Image (cartoon, rainbow, N blue to C red; front, side, top):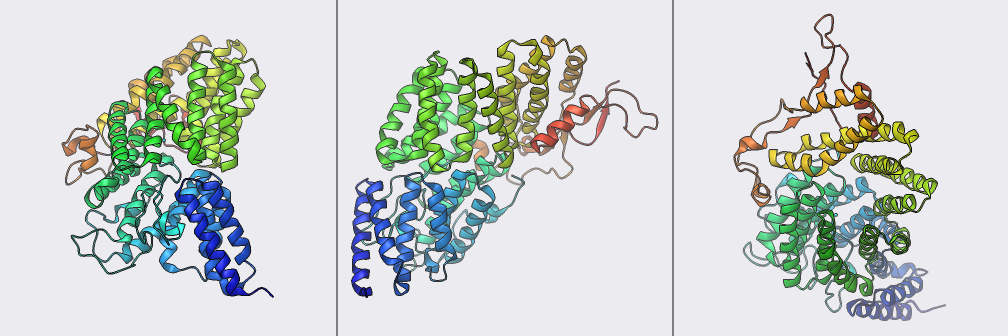
Length: 559
């Protein structure tokens, strides 16, 4: 019978060697060592605690290498085990949530972060300035990337070192309550750092779920807390502020914040964070017609992500290079890059990112004369976004599908293109009414909604749908939003993020609004507003397809 003590020594040696490999930037070698250690410890019940620690390290390297399904399975096993050290639970929950996010399991990721927030808050030796309960306000619905470079103190497990994917580790990081309580004005406790990481992760969830009002509130809170407690780590929350601005069509502030995030990551010696910001800046430059500035950034980012084994980030870099190649007419090169990216994303289980890539691949298939393949890819992407509860992304996919049908030039496809484009454009246009400030709504309208509506008008005109054109014009002319009944000025104005995003400071500019009323085309008989409504069928279809409110239930007459 094998001596458990000898096995324990072997497991410890393998684990220490794995940590050393991880520290020197060899995650695959570290993963293999942790796998051997786990196999050695598993048959021995008396080594259960050691086995769980090795599993945490194994899950961390799996996530680092992009194998998020394996990381989720291992971390779930650890969280469910009765012998798991309660002090490590918050750190494990953050790692767990990040892999869940990559696979699109948003509800479970948010539940894990909510529990982590509660545990870290309870473990605080002193109240954390600026970290109020706003992070836990629930709501209906570009994000931090996967694990990056982290320092690992000698003797620590990877759970402690990688307990918060957003921050470099130090000492017993990730273990709330380790060591004496710091003074209120001294260094932040481990629990405080976990809470900061949790706030950043919660804002990431809100951005990925396209819940813009909540994302704005959480990114503001995370930025404020990190600036107060660990200003040297401000690059990560700044990255989320930039991602939020980019996703909502606010390109100028997005560029400013991304550049600030890049400078902060470089100053803080966070190469993984800097690579992620470069990927975001490249996406911004591509979206604003500056491909010549985007490509060098992509190559600089890939120079870090590929050797570091950052799977999802590398796939995003290849996808962006493929997009640039397609814009130059180099379809074979674009298809090859997209194929390499898809292989990585599928292995990582990164379902939302792979679905977005499918839309790019469909464009290439269409241009290469393979319409059936393009149709299949677009249907898969739209169905995936629907299953993930991402109504806006589904609408954007339908709009891309309609644009390809228009480009095909087949008059027989115009009716189908309109069926896809009109509800999608109405839903995309209505998103702005969920934004707090008038300038935010205006930027969404100009940069996101107007191109969608232009496509609809072109399709309707080409199809000879004069009545549809007339109704679209009337509806667009009657899109003044209604002040919500529960709208009140914010007591202190729009908050710190408002000034960061160049929003007007007076509280009156941050009233909540509802979507516009429905437009009555014909008088009703009894004055109850039950006459014919403009685009009624299309509005109903948009709300059913995408789960987004397109028009208020109230009506106004058009006569």
